[in-house]
Length: 336
Image (cartoon, rainbow, N blue to C red; front, side):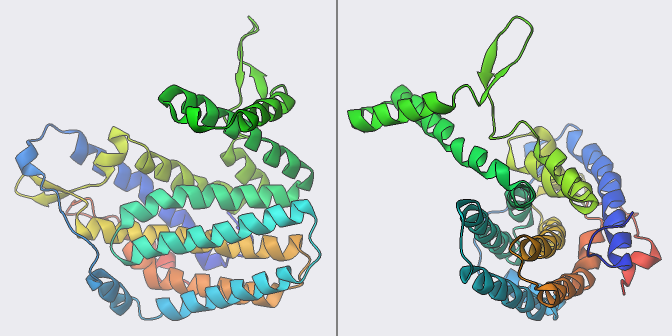
């Protein structure tokens, strides 16, 4: 399987990461679904104190320099884009590009401070945002459709506001404006759900799901959907599956929720996937805005590869508590 802008070693790594997820998921399900006493699952209560950041950076000495390289690369991209003439669709994609980078930073803040499951939750939003902006870059004629769905959002907010009383504080003129703007797009975003003619509003600005958008864009984004979008969705939403995946068997019949070793494991995975998403996005932005910034994007991807080498062991380590952890294939251990 070949991914755009990714070295052969990274192909091996990503495929290995995919396989190890399946292996560890089954073991975590076995751990989590058995009957348990609440006394057997201690719940940690902690606030960030900088210690985990120190542990992380000491364990991965090249990480911060590589992260600075990504930041410098994106700074150059943003500076180049700022000097361009901006159509509406370019401005929208520029805003989404900037929002993607900020969400990337937010994911990293949690990950390097020992909140790996939290970083995994944010990864869901980062994946969707990076896919959406690249999809709109490929289909600029859909930007207006993306904007128009805002009128549906306002209508939904109005309905909820009227339900809980907040809507009473809205001026009559603004209420009429929201209703009128929604009427303009209601037909566009209404779908028929059965042969009887029943209809409903679309749940999103497009009928094309995020995974389908990703697979249209590139094989890499499609492959990362499993661990960059679906699993983070189960972590983010209140699911029994998601919470039991965050348990670790610590021996003597006890399990621990959000054990620090598990959190470090999830943190490494979230970082590896996040930097890969941002590396791919850099090339797409350069192409879309016609920046001719291949050298800059290559430097970003070099940093992505460096981070992959630094975090590979942590990302692959089995933290389910099994005495026989899965080992990655040799070619994935030392990517070139």
